[in-house]
Image (cartoon, rainbow over all chains, first blue to last red; front, side, top):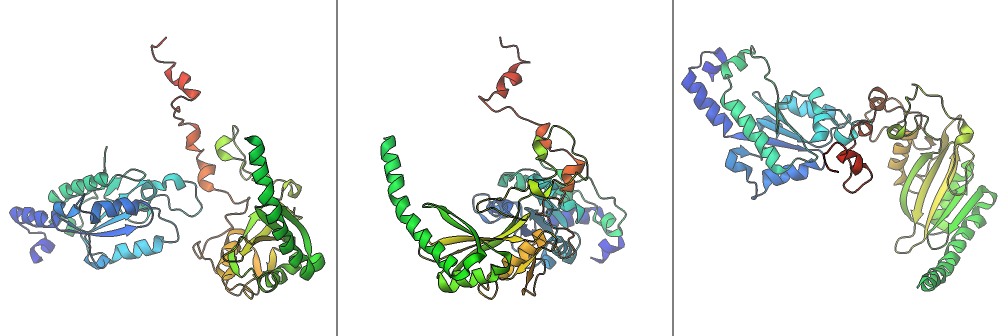
Length: 172
Length: 229
């Protein structure tokens, strides 16, 4: 990876690297509420079979994960844990925010205990709206993220010069 | 048909009523004047309000004398009407902070109440339908009442919750750390004066974004703009 870090990676190698990153996303699951049922259906059931997309939903810890799917209601109490687990993930890392609660607080928009959007704590790459979203919606989010990874300039990202791209919103 | 229904309702109600009267008698026998009030709904429930000072004693009686060894829950109620009104229905802007309603505006439930906040706890006898809802007033100026953990160890967590949500101190429970709220949380969210700040800065969106229900009264308005006669 020395070439990548020095920012001198040849374009064909970038394509190859992105291709392999794209199809071996280790996805960490943070099911915080009922959306986790839909996430479980999308990630751990043969009907939706997320592994056909090249997503491996079984990392044992955030230190082995490339992608995290935060689904469910984020409360102020659990915010430190989310931040801490996110910081444990190795870069490059991606975040999918699944469901209205995680996106903006959802039906608990006026609650005294619910965080109004996980993007206040961690940068979000893909928003999946819905209450809850269908498993297909989450899979579309994964596919859109894969497209982004495919076209990403890794050297630029490592140098830290790249501005954060606009987050993807599924269904828009 | 209607006669049958009332007949079946009356018959078992009288039987169950006796059971609850007997249960109430156990409490009045051991607590005496500390039983401030009681209410029996035949076939449904028994409410007993005890004096604030007899709260821990009531737990002992419930567990040891009445045999209600199963602790269901302990919580509290703030009977004061909300100073914010019902946000979603309010037609006018409520000033912030709103004037607090008078203490006398509090309307307590069964067996009444002299203070704004009451603690309540439910205990039962497992395997039977014997169950009592015990209540006690919590003083307004110094919200403080005895703990139940000597009788029911499981009350400890419930008291922690009542403490963080209502600010009630439970004398004798030395572990009143927050259980649901973050440690640094300020205020007691289930008290009526606690503002939901999100609603202060943004009106309830349901009021501006109403979808007509199919077949409802609003449907005519929705189709008004259409070309249908």
